[in-house]
Amino acid sequence: MTKERPFFDPEIECMSREEIVERQWPALKRVIELAYDKAGLVRKKWDEAGVKPSDINSLEDFSRLVPFITKDDIRDYRTETGDPFGGILCVPRSELRSITGSSGTTGDPTFLARRDLHGPQTDSRFDRSFWDLGIRPGDYAVTTNPTIRGSTLAPLLHFGLTPICFDHSPAEIGRLVEACRTYRPTLIMALSTPLLMGLEQFEIDTAIDLIEVFSSCKAVIWGGEPLGPRGRSLTERWGMNVYEVLSLGDATITLGSANHSGAYAWEDEVFVEHIDPDTGLPAEDGTFGELVATPLQNFVDPLIRFRSEDLVWLTREKSESGRTHARFKVQGRAGDQIVVAGKQLLPISIWPTIESQLESKAGLFQIVRPNTPEDFLRLRVGYAGEPNLASLEARLKAEIHRQLGIDSKLELVPNDELLKLGPPHKIPRIVKLQTA
Image 1 (cartoon, rainbow, N blue to C red):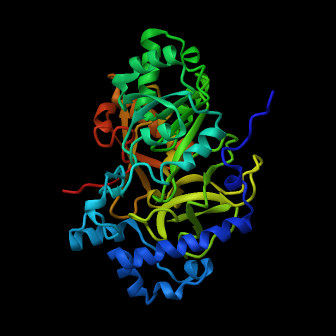
Image 2: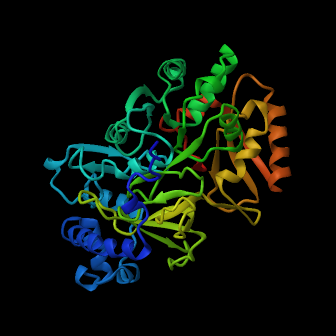
Image 3: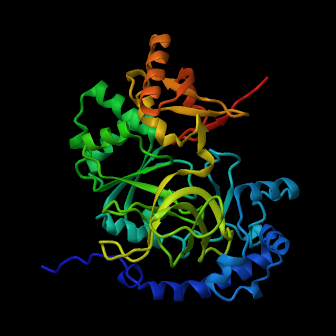
């Protein structure tokens, strides 16, 4: 019997570091020349910095001279000019065949465009990741449709999977379970907090064995936000092999690796930088820093040196699998960091405290950012059922103090009210304090 190959595209996936760099420079040069010529925001930022494409003759020049672009830059340009694409579109609008957007959880959605539906962006990175996860052409795949860049169908069809499609809604849980029992998919894409809540309630209501339901699945893709500790324990109890789908600096999206050593940043498609968020200087390999990305194959709306605000651990060390491209793990977003009583906190720090109580076990909460520093943590916390709110508040405050060592001020609201505040697959985890 012939041994199955371990890689989808070994020539690309296992390139030496020298080969990766050799491929990146000509691709980057083409993208930056196009963007400077066609994208108003890029030209504005470069002209303000006194930089032209002719000044950039290497990857090192690019990282040293080219200004960053941020989401605020895009929003400001959109406000100033009325350009819905924020000054990054490089082709006439008449050539576009697809317009989607980011989820807009942290602000206005960013428009994202494609000129073709079956070009190089569709979707070699998923081919490699699906193969790594044990998925094979001809398999069935359950797919829900949350608010992400583009259709969830394209990468499945490109790889040769047969999609079974559902709305991204807890109301679909019964049909989704029945499809898994009937068609035995090897992939579910993508699970989220609302769907996880729906599955848990379905299990309670029906007593159906979800371990058996999901026994054929080799990978369950989680997306939108981190998977909290309690949610992870649920997926483990159901026998799910969970991997994250992650944005790679809005240049593309990628999946976690099969060996859980991080998500691959496929460097033939994206030039990845890893910087100190305070200084903007390069961070050391194998440490935490802010992810900066520039697409190498996007000639429609490329973001050049885009500061993602994602705080990531990143390494270019060769993976145990033999793949040589950079890998990263997301810790949180720079904009989500808050300081309370001298302690730096991210939403993931707070998750276990909220999940600790039965009524708030879904882990739905928002950090309310004050207008001036406070020595206590403000939270809006979701609950289910009709609990004794005074008791729940007291227990949550005690748990927050026990785990984090800080005091808190809580606003308790029904889960359903919080879920109305976001796109189908997540809610905004940071909100500003509203004052009269």
